[in-house]
Image (cartoon, rainbow, N blue to C red):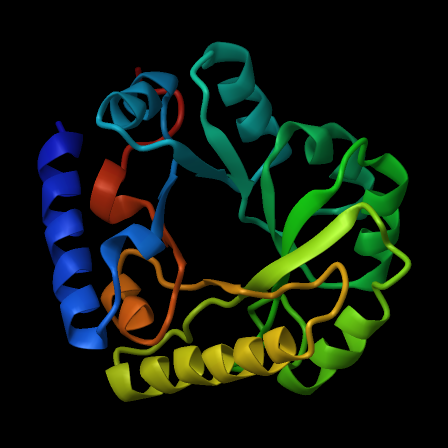
Length: 230
């Protein structure tokens, strides 16, 4: 059985070490527990250990957790969101990490009952298997969102490339940080773009060193349990 408390202690220590190396403050980084494919009981164990940000990547998984968990937590939708699924998701989450096309933005604008904090997903590594805008498309895309009053672009999100070469991973994170800073400097209404969602179980330390403010950690925290196991 995975010991969430022990895993969390190790992760928090590694986060602190990464902050020390990157001259960062631990309190400036939000740990999102990725609870996709994890049972409600394991998710509750995460909450009991003080984590208040949970990440889901499917509408069905999100709804199952919403029905069973009454705690005051922040819900992050971290998977690619189909336009037809927006209605069932958008008003139940606090953050969307995968805004990557105008049709999705239009549907959010139509369905959201309040302004939603969104990350624009960027495919920095240009891998065909990954969703997200091309690096050079991001600024124009954000400019086109000015009439979408229900969307607030709080930052950018990316996933590291499938490689064990930490130099390549670091370069991807560094490029996203540079782009985020460039957009933030524009002071665009509705797009403060002060945040960076990057880093998962295998690379969150590098992400922190390169400026991540939200990290999405699943397996390293909750293990490899699959949904349905109580």
